[in-house]
Image 1: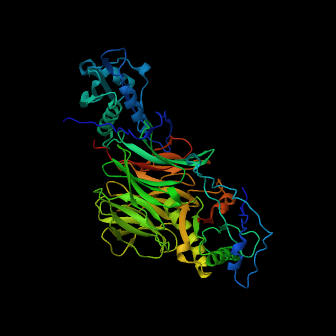
Image 2 (image 1 turned 45 degrees about the horizontal axis):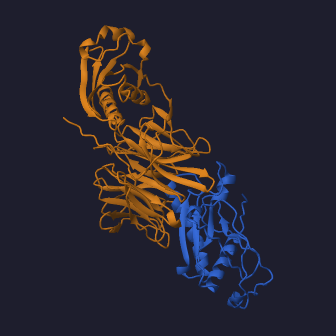
Image 3 (image 1 turned 180 degrees about the vertical axis):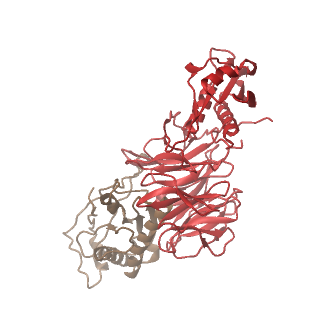
Length: 432
Length: 173
C-alpha cells in the first residue's frame, strides 16, 4: 500500500514560527509505563545526519502517550538499523519488551525513504515493518505515522500522533486584547495562525475531512459563523443573522452545520444549516437556552445543552426534528456535550461539588466519570481514536490545555501557545 | 477599573431641547460635560485610522447616566436602580428616533462558553424589554452577547465576576 502524504501548505496564513512546545506529563494514577527501546535510525544520504531525528519523534510520541518509557540511548547495548542485526538477548537483559529500529535513505534531492521495524523481544519476532516515502516537508508526519502504527501494534488502540489540534488564544497587548485561532500538530509543533482579530473568536470546529474549520467571529461587534479552508486561507460567511449566530459543528458528511441562532428576541434554538444552500432548519422551539449542538457519529441525533428544566442539562433530538429527550440527570450543571467518534461515550462540562470539570458518560451504562481536577475546566474534545480527550483548564489567570484518557488514568498538561489558551478541538484522522 | 464605569453625558445640542416632553425639565444648556468611557473595552481599529466611536448618551433629566448595568449571580433581573437606568435610556431613545443603541450582554467566566453566550443574551434581552416599554422602537435596538469572551475584570473570585455580569449600552449612530 502506498500512502500519499500531502502537507498542508497554509500559504496565505501567517507562519508564527515553530513553537517548541513545553510539555509536562502528570500521571494521575498508577499506570505502569512499559519499557521500550527506540534505536536511533540509520542514515544513508549526503551529509552527516538526515533531515529529521525520526527515532526522537517516535520516542517523544510514545513517551507523551503516558503508556511507554523509552530507555535512554546510553543504556543501549547495540544500535542496529538492520533487522538481521537485532540481538534479542541484549534487549532481554535491559528488560525492554519491544524494540524499534529503522533508517532514513535519501532517494533524491528532496526525497527520502523512511523504514522502520518493530520487534517483540520476548516473542523474538517482528510485529510490524513498514517503509514510507517522504520529503523534508512531510518527514515529520511520516515519523508520527510510524509512531501511530507502533502504538497500535503495542496497545490495540489507534494512534493519534499524526493529528492536529485547533485552539483559541487571547493575548493582552498595548491595543487591548488580540484573539487568535491557531492550528498545530497534536504535539504542539508547526503552529499556524488561522485567523486573528481584535474581536472575540469562538467555537472552532473541524470538518470531517479536516480540511476546513468553522468558527464564530465577533468582528464588527456582531456574531457571525465562518467556514475557512486551511490550505488556501479563504473563508465563507455562512450565518450572520440578527442576534446570536453561534456554536457551529459539522455533520458527519460535512454538508451541514448544526448552529445556534438567537434571533432578534434572543431565544436561542438549535438549527441545522445546509452549507451550500444556507437553508436553515429549526430543531428546537423552547423558550429556554438551547445551544452547543453536536452530531452523533451516525448522523441520527443532535446532542445539545438546554436549561429548559432550570439549569443546563444535555438533551438530544432527531437530526430531522421531533421531541427532545433528556440525557443527563446527575448534578445541576451538564453542558457542551461531545460524542466520542465511536458513539459510545458522551463528554461534557459537569459541575462537580462547586468545580466545573470534564466528565464522560458511558451511553450504555449511563454512569458518569469525572476526568479532570480543575475548577474551571471546559471545552472537552475527543481524539479521533475515542481514547483520549483534550480540554482547557485555568490553573491561574490564563487557560492552558490538558489531555486525559477516557478512563481518567493518564492526565497531562500541554503548555502550548501564548496568553490565555482555550477551546481546543482535536482534528479527525487526516486522510490526506 | 471602577465597578461603576460611568458615562459622562456628552450633551450640548440645545436644538434637541424641544424634544423633551413636558414632564421632564429641559436640560440646562450650561450643564454640559464631555467625557469618554474609561474601561476595558479599548479594542480599536487604530491601525486603520478610525477609532472606535464614543458612546454619546442623551439624558433629558440632565446629570450622569450610567452606561453599564450589573446583575447578580445567575440572575437576569434588573434591580430597582438598574431598571431606572435602563428606563432613562429607553426614554432617551423614544424621544430621539435618530439614536440607536447596541446592548452588549456579558456573563462571568464560570461554565461553558456557548452557554454563557446564552446567559449574556438573556441579560441584554431583559434590558431591551425595559427600553421597549419606555417607547423605544425595536429598530433602534440591537443586542449582542459576548458571553465570557470580553471580561471587564480578570480574576477567579466574586469581585471580578460581579463586574463581568453586565449589559453595556453602546450608542451607534
